[in-house]
Every structure is written in C-alpha cells, then in structure tokens.
Length: 249
Image 1 (cartoon, helix red, strand yellow):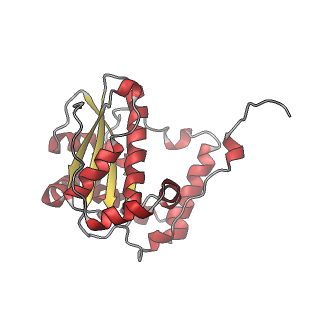
Image 2 (cartoon, rainbow, N blue to C red):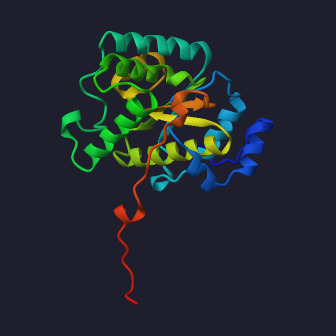
Image 3 (tube, rainbow, N blue to C red):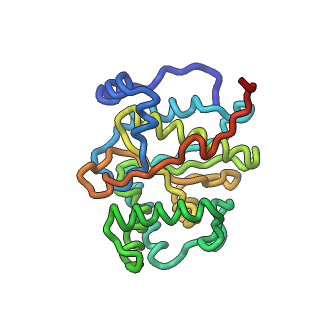
C-alpha cells in the first residue's frame, strides 16, 4: 500500500448523514449478522469509502496483508450460480484451506452448547423450522451462496506469508468493515461458508496462490420485514470471560 495520502472517495449524502449521527458504541450495539437483504444497490463510492475506513485497522508491523474482492451485478450472479451448482452437486471440499472450526461432533463445552442454542434460535425460533426438517434447514443454508440476497458480495483474502498472524489482521479488518458499514446505515453478514467451495472462488476471482481465502461478507440494506429480522443472539457477561489483576483495596 502506498504511503501517499489520497483523497477520500466521494460518498452518498445518505451515508455521510448516517456516519455523522452514529457513535461507535451504537454501531457495536446495532450490528448483527443479517441473513435477509433488500436488493437496493450500494454505490461503488460508498463501498470504497467503507473499505478505506476498514483499512485503518491495525496489523502486525503494518503489513496490511488483506485483499478484498467485491462482486456485484452480473458478476455476482454468475459466481452465485456456480456456487449453488457446486453446493447442489455435493462438491464441498473435504479439506479447507485452513482449519476454520472443529467437526460437528468434536466441539467442546461451552462452545457445543452455545452453538446448539444458536441453531435452535435461528432455525427453530426465527425460521420456524423443526429440528427434524433437514431439507428446510439445507434450503436456508443454501442462501449463503447468494449472499442472502445482498447486492454486494465480498471475499476477503490474506497473504500466506505472515503466517497465522495474517488471520488476526484479517479479523481486525473484517470487524472494522462491519462496524463502518453499520455506522453508514448498512448491514452485513460474515460468511465462512464460502471456504467450503474455495475452488469456485478461485476460478471466478483473481486470487493468487499465495493468498488464503478467509471468508465472505454480504453487504447491503437489511430487509426488516423478513422474519429473520427478529433474530438476535445473546452475549456472555463480562464476568464470564474476564479476569482482573489489580491492587488489593
């Protein structure tokens, strides 16, 4: 990345107004993983502005190892079509490019219980899908590969050269991008599901071999009339994950 300071890209009036009125705290509290989007387009200038903000993220030795691939319009349609075809044919890879998560039966507590509760909340409570209705559950999961109807699809990659530290940097960039989007009145959904079909991504996008595909991200305006808009996930209390080391009174 050049050290030369560049002029910030022009943003739409709506985005500027949203940024002016939302605090970081409000963005954090209102951010959620949206799984139903409106088809309303997001101007390229607005996307570029969000990416410029996300690029302010910290990274190891300022290496900035991330690369971003943005798909919209007919390009997104073609990518989605092949992803869905691969999904329907069972062409999921047997080995991902990195160890994203344990196998379903290998989760330890408390993560196993949290994951189960999430599934019950999403499929059972929000979507009204019974635990035994595997076809309906699969149909919902399939929507991942159309970015849940969002007009903008993003694939995030990082250089393999900085090793696992690049994944930390990628997480910082991704969170910054999601908060910047929320601050601009937009919504997102980070999607690891794409790494199960990474060969399709590599065929469609210009991703060098030395870049690792981290995840996807849906970006757009939430469909607040969709039943999924009622789905919210809880968070653990600070006391459950924090240990303070301080002087005794």
